[in-house]
Image: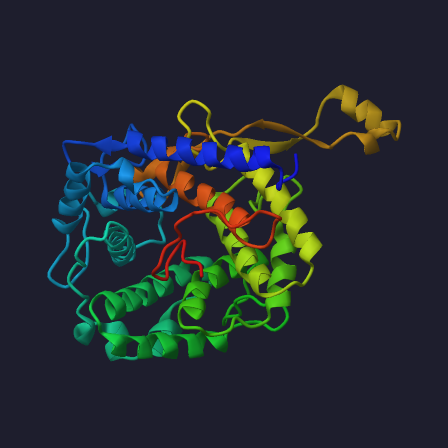
Length: 397
């Protein structure tokens, strides 16, 4: 089936309907928020994922006035005087990552809650206390220099959080002077982009996929500030080289990884919207990715999983015999088997089985489908999706 078939357009509308139904199924009327999965308790981050997912699918009107007010009250009840958000259920002992400290989780939570309240057209939370913020007082470039950068994928997240919050307060609290820090940050980032790959180049050598994920986290702010993204052709080359034969961008034989798949598709969509370079290759890439993403939706509840399958090398006697006879060229050396294990967003209360639907994967995977539909990477007309208006995940202009 071609991506520009009318049936495929209709099916994407149907997927959107099922996705919004899944998000609504995560509602908890007692707390006034949403869960990561039906088996998890309500959290600030899961609530934010769901609100942003409902915004994307133009489905916020599925929430009645009581529900919207309840969500706003729940979010606002957990904001501190300095504008930061802290989940009442969070305990660092429940972290599923040895690399994420308390500050990381709080900055992530704060950024997501700011965006969710904006999506709900609610009054903004208090601005951050920038005058006392060490990242600003010392100079934002010095803060970036102080990050380790041995794992650029991880360290780029705090950069995204602080820049998103600066833009949020500049716009929602009319503090336009904060954009000077964003511009200074982009000046610094300009000096850490590789002319060879178009991706992040820091003090430590990292893999191409790691550099791709880091670069993705910075691009919102270039677009928001009207600054060009350099080396577009190299970015397209790099992203295309990272795609696996199964259509997605995951590593290690697993078919699908929520963040990496979205990062690459988003970055490729941005770059291809500004350049016709390798247009046919990009369209083919997006066609493969689209079909692979559809396989990750669960028919039972309409949500999306992180992954369902992994590739396993054939080991049967029959295959070894065929290979010995020189006839294996017509048979794939791998087979797909169900994937096992836990998927998580670095916290116990944001975890589930890899093949289960969850709020985060559903949000990002449907956004990936929307990007393929929205940009000129396919023959589609522009559809009526609601991308984020503030620079963060889902921001597109």
